[in-house]
Image 1 (tube, rainbow, N blue to C red):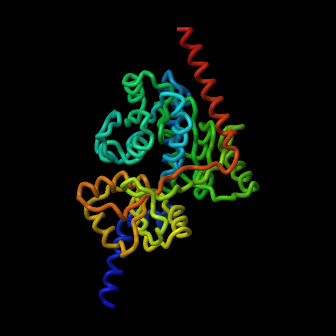
Image 2 (cartoon, rainbow, N blue to C red; image 1 turned 90 degrees about the vertical axis):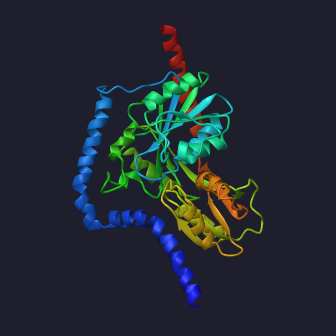
Image 3 (cartoon, rainbow, N blue to C red; image 1 turned 45 degrees about the vertical axis):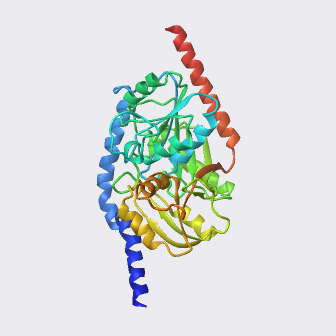
Length: 385
């Protein structure tokens, strides 16, 4: 009995410690008194971002716009809104039509400056999300660079055939001017009810939504009523430009895939969920519905897994259960397993995609019209020069 209690205590520590910082942040932001105390700082932060944005809006600071169609996918909030699967959706849509590229900052990598992805790259050299995109979409050029205005010309110099570039998480990166700005908003955390950091999760004030050419409400539940969609769209339109279209998407989890490449066995039942993403709650809810969730080990977003983490995962894994994680975590855990010479037979990951609740054809039509209009303008300007 004492042994089981001791083991349970160790498992509890494994679950709690990796998310201590995240939990403290959540507690702080939900404390009404402290939230009010932080409001003056949030006002100051919002005012500073307003000044910065106005300098670019008035042309007092230069913004680079490349000679190819440039699409930005980003958000107003700190934390995950589903940017990577939405970027993946665009790559799948255009990848077979044009030579294209995706450019990311490469958050969490240990390298600096511009870098083109190669087979030799790891999450440490590229970042976990760019590495995921590179492996999933081998025909697409993937690059990282903190200074996007400097990285884009270098990308085009290395791949002059590129006709289209997707910027990942660049909504606040004003030194670059996209031709098309797609703003994502998490259904569970609408920006129109939030405040700038540190009193809230906004990177800038709500009216930053005016730069959006389209808004996608992400992580929506299946069967979201049309009335609620209309109410959400109305709240967004309070801050966005008139006529900006609003779309609604949800996450779709494909069949689990083994770390070795094989699909999950039909008898897969008991799972230990391991996540290092910003908001794992929707995935946890899905796993609870489909499998018997033994435990959930939550790590911080973009967590860099270590040998001790892997040992903790192994310790928490009961007999007969398997480890289930995200594709973003797989690109870091997989190489670690190989490096340590450990068996990956009980490790699986979920490929994640998006699905439009309605109006997917309308979104694609809007996207193509935007692309063709920009390309026609680029051709006209080229002839003039």
